[in-house]
Length: 300
Image 1 (cartoon, one colour):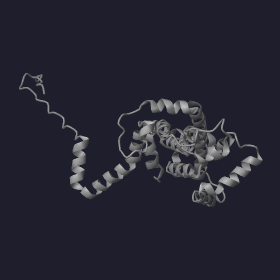
Image 2 (image 1 turned 120 degrees about the horizontal axis):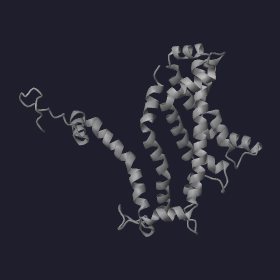
Image 3 (image 1 turned 180 degrees about the vertical axis):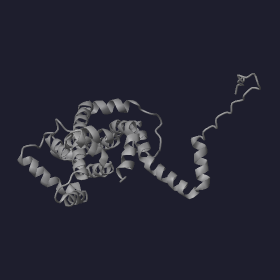
């Protein structure tokens, strides 16, 4: 701390040091002392949730001849498992397919759900509440129930083996995203619409120039949810796509086998670890808006 001379020539002014912020370990210790039981439960839950990911990392670094032996850590780490996992299957081509499919579905779902949610929130029409209740009711139906009828429908229109099912699904929106948008847009003051109407704006212009720019957190939230749903989906691509245009989820789940048909667990773990990296990066990049989108969508 350094002294600062007073401009009037008086005694030196000693600036007060800012109070140091409590470090994370000290805050954790205070929380543990204040609420030991909830803190202990939180630690146990965190360990249980992190343990599978730690096991995946260890398996991805384990040599093939040490997989399955009765020891927690291998005698040495084999970093080349990642390179072998990328070479063993057409990894980057499958990753490109997944990226294109997830991005297209995410973009279409984000904007189609926003437009539908805007209609439910701000427009008036007959049986609007009944239609919204029916929409919410579809969230209770497990997707596996409609999988076979959907496959038969797409097969009749020769869409199996193409990306068109995801384009149509994205253009139709998702019930959960529509619900979030409807709750979010319902909280907007009516003065916004009235001012836009006075300026001569129609409903689409109000949506695109007023409501959509103000819903950035929810746009990011809806995109992350939709992107992750397609990136992590195995059943849909395995059923609707073929070997030439399938996704990385199918390739990682079914591609790491030797000539006898036995799984190569170390390469499977290495490929799975690389597979989850894009989703983790997307969430880390969008986490602030992601959390804010959920927090504000329930306000009314």
